[in-house]
Length: 148
Image (tube, rainbow, N blue to C red; front, side, top):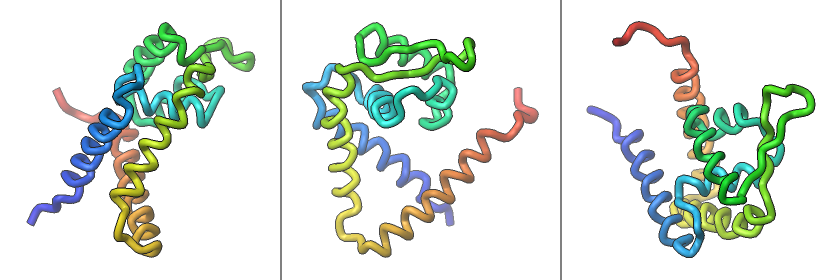
């Protein structure tokens, strides 16, 4: 029998996306950009490479989204004083202004979907999903083999 675990996780992710879109419809950003604002506000000064690794999105896509956010005034990028090839990401006041709403939408969704679970259930779910995440991360970080 095939497990529905991954399918359920993917459907939950899409529900979260839809929920944030509804909750933040007044926000000038699209739901895909919310995670960028959230991460930039929580970790100001991170590198683009750290950013891509942390949110598990390829570097090219991250660079394009950050370009859009920079053009719109939500982030600024600065060359790292330690390494001139590295660019650090900093949120602007515009990002900090919308961060509470963005973060609040994530938190409200999380609380709602965890409703009815005990603290022990929540801890176990957290432990199990961390294992799944680490396994997935290991898989995408392995050297490429074969293929077309």
